[in-house]
Image (tube, rainbow, N blue to C red):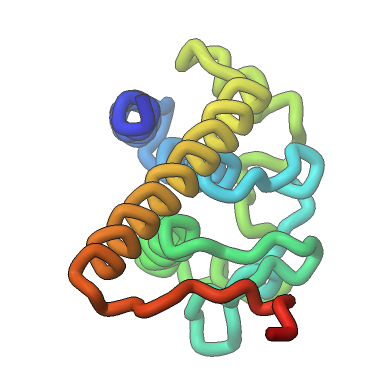
Length: 167
């Protein structure tokens, strides 16, 4: 199921990029959608973001969005880097640190309308992103447990102790 969700959204991100009114709108909406999917960025935060909130002085993505507690994952950083490179190529004034990060999406209403054109919504993207993240964590946990089991079966572990055990 995890691969299905990611595959569905990979296709959606591509459709957004290729089928938006202008390529600049598409690149912005794709980046916003990835921030929501991979990081759960709040709907009301998106129009308020400025370039300096997610990029340092050298144009590299920060580890965290400064206006929130959201830590940027590798997927989110990759989306932001692609977007920032496109932004720089269009007009260097767009990269002014106090400029809005998404100049064509200054209202939540406009985001909602554009997502509707692609048959989706903020809530759906966020919900599916949370499901993807949860399933990905479960998959990693199961992989780690299987690896630990192999390690134990090969005799690499003598005993497993409870760290709270005083004996």
